[in-house]
Amino acid sequence: MPPRWRRSWSSTSHVWNRARRSTVSLRVLASDAVAGTNDPCVDLWHVHVPHHLCALEAHWQRLDASERQRAASFHREADRQRYVISQGSIRRVLGQRLGVDSAHLTFERGEFGKPFLATHPALHFNTSHSGDWVVHGVSASTPLGVDVEAIAPGPIDLQDFRHVLTAHEFERLSALPATRLNPAFISTWVRKEAYVKATGHGLSKPLGDICIELLEGGHFGLIHDHHPQPPGTGWNWQMLDLGPDHVGCLAYPGRPLTVHLRGDSDRI
Image (cartoon, rainbow, N blue to C red; front, side):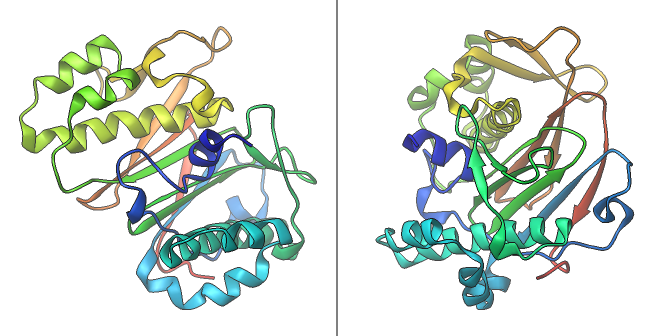
């Protein structure tokens, strides 16, 4: 699998803050949505990493041979830990959702590298992690994409990221004071990456070809995409509250759905 897909789908690295990425684990709540009713919804888990490092061994035990081999390839212990917890926690979430042993789940990849469950391809899920947070999204109702990014403390040079911005976005961001540029740029990024992950194309779809803006009424809309979706496909974006140092976003097509938030108390 090309490196760009490992970055896009599992978010184990990124262009501006590679060292600070991490993940954590969660327990699925026994709500109607999780228990398998027909109510269309999205379940989101976002939890704080440092509180869950003590569960590293439990996560390791859930990994298959290929995941353990990849974990062993990391040079930095912190990177290895983040990967193990990321894979172990999504296995736990999906295993509890389906009522199966999380260690027995088998993952496959689609045409552009997006993972899915071989035995339950209609159960959509996506994962992202950065800094102190992980986000897992799961839905039986719709494809979805999630992205979370830690805000780097120093200033960024917007010219370095011009290729991922439309001319309008570059002009809008360039007009901002330096104190607002980092969070505004990263917010723009996570909306785009969550969207391309939800479409199934990941970063094979150039981010500079996509424009997502805040519309009248306070919701985000797709202004243009050089690789358009089928006619009548609407999109939804929900920004995630992860504190002042992180930005996250959920994206999914179709009509707005109920989003069930799972927090730090929902541990494995």
